[in-house]
Structures are given as C-alpha cells and as structure tokens.
Amino acid sequence: MFSLSRFILSVFSITMLLIFLISASGFTENVLPPLSTPAEQTAPQSNALQLPALDQTPQRPGQEQQTFPSTDGTTQDQTSGPANPFLPNLQQPGATIQPQVTQPVIQWKELNLNETFGFNPLITGVVKYPANWLMNIDTWNKRIIFSEDQNGLIAFTALLTTQSTIENAQAYAQQIAGWLQQSIPDLKIINQNYRSDPNAAQAGMNLTSGKITLQGTYQGKIFTFLLQPYVLFVPVVKMSYVSALLCQAPQDVFQEKLQTYFNPMLVSFENNAKGMQ
Image 1 (cartoon, rainbow, N blue to C red):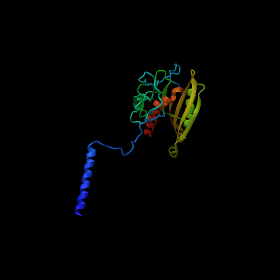
Image 2: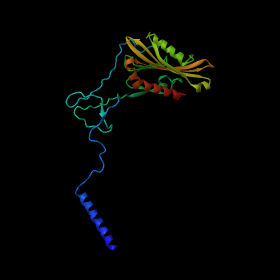
Image 3: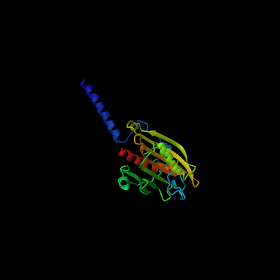
Image 4: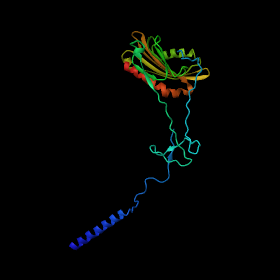
C-alpha cells in the first residue's frame, strides 16, 4: 500500500513539472473560438393682430450641411456609420462615414414681467426668450413681441392677461384671427382643438384653452401661425381673463423654428401661468 501511494505521488509530481515547463516555454492553444469574425461590419444609421413688420421683405434663413473630404480629395457619401457607436470603425478605401450635425447653441435670457409691467397683479412671474432676439414691449396693450430680426417675420407674440367679457377660448381665437386677416385676407384654419378644465367648472368658472394652426399668404410667401388662447370666464359677474400666445414664421422654416425657439418659449409662459394659480 505504501509503495502504491508513493508511485501515485511521483506520477503527480512529474505531471505538474511538465505543465510548468510547457507554460514557461510560451506554448499556448486556443480552446474557444474568437468572439468576432475578422470581417468588418458596418450598420447604416437612420437619420388681426397686427403682424410685426409684415411690410418688410422676408428673409429665408438657411442652414448648409457640411461634408467631410476624404484623404484623396473626393467627397464621401454620408449614409453609413461605424458598427460600434462607442468605438470608431477602421475605414477601408472607398468606405463611407456619417458626419455629426452641429446644433446651434442657444443662449436664453429672462424677462421679469412684474418689473416690466409695473407690478400688475394679472401679469407676474419670469419668462425666458432667446438672448439674440429683439423685444418690443407694449405696456398699454399688455403685449410683448419677440422677433428673430428686424424684419419681424419670425416672431413670438405674447398677449398677456387682461380683463374681458369673452366667454371661451374659441371666441377669443376668432377675434385674434380677425385681426390677422386684416393683413392676410386668405388666412385659413388648418386644424384646431379646444378643451375645458373640469376642475374650474366645479368651482363655478369656465376655463378653456385652444391650439389652432392657421396659414395664409403674404407677399407671395405662405406663413404658418400657431395660436394658443386661454380664457377664464366667471359667469356670476359676466367677466373673464384672457391671454394668448402666437407663433409665426414662413411655412418652409416654421417646424425648425417651432422646435428650436417656439416650443421652449411656449413652455416657459405656460409654466409661469401655472405658477400663478
């Protein structure tokens, strides 16, 4: 029994010695297949309200898309990108790359409505607007016009809260559309949506709001308008508080301006109104 144990111990020692010598000599063997094949893979990426200065010749802002030259001086197609979104793919001759579109950096400023309108109890709070836009404040009519440039064709108008006898948002929208139609005779409604607040109804008031898209032609160019009226009507006293926000731009750039400028401004004014409630 002692001899057999000694023999097994000797065989084990020799085996361990052989493993050590093989490892020290640098001999290795691949046991598992590689995680990826050598071939490179690429995956495509999916890419009347008086109108401000409407007697001016409109300007059409445009944006050029930059292309990246290849090393041989030719312009590369911009239809595909690297397979790994975090690591750059090694490009072979004739391969394509996807350039990154640089978004404009927008600086915003704040406007204190309390200070601007003499601490009017109906007009309070702080709103934001693009820092490089022009601002025209009409304290008599409780109106602010923000415009992208002196032409005033791309503009955001805030009709701030005033007292009225208008009973709902639809009636107020019709009034504002009538003002616009004085300068744009072919003004028409593209779509409209109105809603009322059930909580206000329980309190004996009628709070309505709307979202109306209009279009019309001026100086041969089609303009798009987005109108959002708000009316709080108190039936007991036959009195209401009305306000509205109006965005306008030529049709071909309206969606761009809506996403870049108008939507943040709409949210700013709406959040300010909620804070007053």
